Image (cartoon, rainbow, N blue to C red):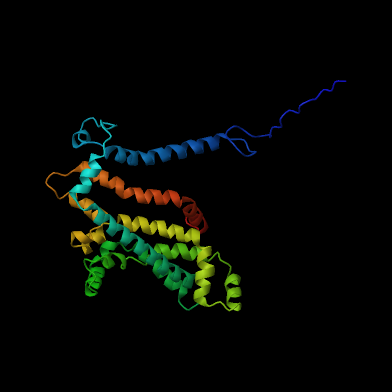
Length: 295
C-alpha cells in the first residue's frame, strides 16, 4: 500500500519586494530618496577620502598637475616623519586632557542648569532662559579680550585649566538638555520626593539616566568643539608644552618650507577619534536630537 505526500508551496507575503522587509511596496519617491541620500553621503566622504589618500603621498605627488588620485607607494613614512619632527604625543595628550575634562565639566554644568530651567518654577525663569539662548549669537571674537583678562587675573594663562574652564558652560548644551528634560513627567519627580529622595539624588539617579540620549548629543558636540578649537588655545597656550593639536598643526605653516604631506598625515590622525566617536554614538545622537525638538 503506497501513500502519496504533497508538499505545500511556500507562502509568500503579499506586497513585499526584494528591496523591502515590510509589506509596503517601494515607490519611485522612496527610490529617489535613497539615491539622493546615498549620493549626498558619497559627496560628503570625498574630502575625507582625498585627505586619507594624500597622507600617503610625497610632496612631489601632492604638487603634481593634474592631481594624482592614488599614491605611488603606500608607505607610512609621512606618519613616522611627522612623529619625529615634533612632539606629537605631548600635543595629543594635551588635546585629550582638555577635551575629556571640558566635556565632563560641560555635561555637569549644563545638565544642572537645564534641570533648574526645566523643572523648577521661579521668578524670571523664562527671561533667564531667553538670555541664555541669546548668548549663542555672541561670537568668541567679541568677548575674547574680557575672557582673556579674567583668565589672566586667575593665573590660568599658559595652563590646561585656562583651556578647560572658560568654555565649560555652553548655551547650546543647556538648550538641548532643557528641551529633553521637559519631556520627563513631573509626577515622576514628585513621587521620588514623596519617597524621601533628596533633590541631588533625584537628579543623579532618576533624571540623568533618562537623559542619556540628550547627554550623548551634548557630549559629542562638546568633544568636536574642544578637539577642533583653535582660536582660544592659540591665545592662551603660549608655550609648546601646552599646545593642542590644531595649534601644533598650524605651527608647521610657519616653517620656511611647509611640509604639507606631514600636515595631512597628522590631520588624518587628529580626525580619527572624532569620526570613531561619532560612529559609536550615532544612534544616541539621532535619538537625542529627535526628542529635543531640534530640526
